[in-house]
Length: 551
Image (cartoon, rainbow, N blue to C red):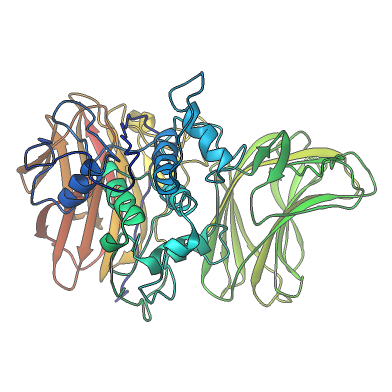
């Protein structure tokens, strides 16, 4: 029986919310009075009740509307910068000067001037901020000496130590500011963060006495499900100078495409028939298992684009290269895939089986085949994009994601418009359920199914869904044709076993989580982070996810 496997389906969409933050010029002292009932949507029994009370009393956070705190609402980049700037200003006894422009411009300018954020770090201040971005922002709002270690944390299970934010996040773990979202300390770094979670973090940042003293459980022999690369954006601009995403190394043998400012870019401009341009990303070395890669890139030529993987000694493990309109796979030998190379946008998915030395390749939702990898390569240590010496072209990389040990990790970012994502079966009626904009939106009737190898023991299924008004939706975990656990949504309520236990608003994204345990035959249902039910898990394994919708 397969134990302790992570099963996760992440479907995302940015949602704008509004957050009001008050400030106290006198330091971290109470400026408001909180009592039970101050916010109708914050029950005294909720885990975050004390956190909300403290954040409100200290003047860090106010309600969203009269008597409403909106604990499940998300936080935008602008709102996070506002809070971090005010924490910094209070601690240092500074004033935040007003400037003309948008409401948050004064806080952005303050954050830039005081090293809380960097020029060009954020291009969209209205999008949801990711959990790691907020954590780093708060870490940079206070001196490092303010975060004295009190916990013995050896690792963050789902954050690679090579990530640029790893060290600051580890500092916050050891200080007890954040301790993850599971008993093992999984941080869910790229997820959005809720107002209730933000209240807890800002309290622990400001007041050391509020920080957690906690011992995390160790994974032991559990397979860790982690991202080795997780770059949604491959470049940023700092004072009009473009730089690659952190962790990527730039190489240009002709020094073309690099100007006098030292600019590097995700756009590999090769203007030479004798030299090449490349970018490389070292990863934590992998010696076994299946490593999955999905990436999006554009090219203006059907010849000369390379994507390849190398071992610790520089030997190429596997490579895809376009040449004269054809796409070739190179491992033990050079194989014509039988598919034409694409001049334009490419959505590429690869499974690298390090044990079998086989690579499955999927391009634009079409499976190209399974190809042998080089036996000379001993491991997987680096991913690279490059042009060939002979060809002149532009190769622009948009996103890169590499991960291990997720049975399902779908964000629907790799699908050309109008096609069903690779690995899913969907009838024509439900084709509208899928979008090319990093999300799944249920917009028609029908069924979509994802099948995978049997999962048992403890596992987690998590997904975000947007349910239109009058739509009836079911999210099911199945073993073959039998339903093991299911969450239904209709009439603005979620149901488990026919019992309504959580109301929701139509056309608002909802986070559904099922924590299964086939040993105890139970499933814990959580909606937007709140536990709503524990129901029987009626099968000894789960082999598919089914999303169905009827009008």
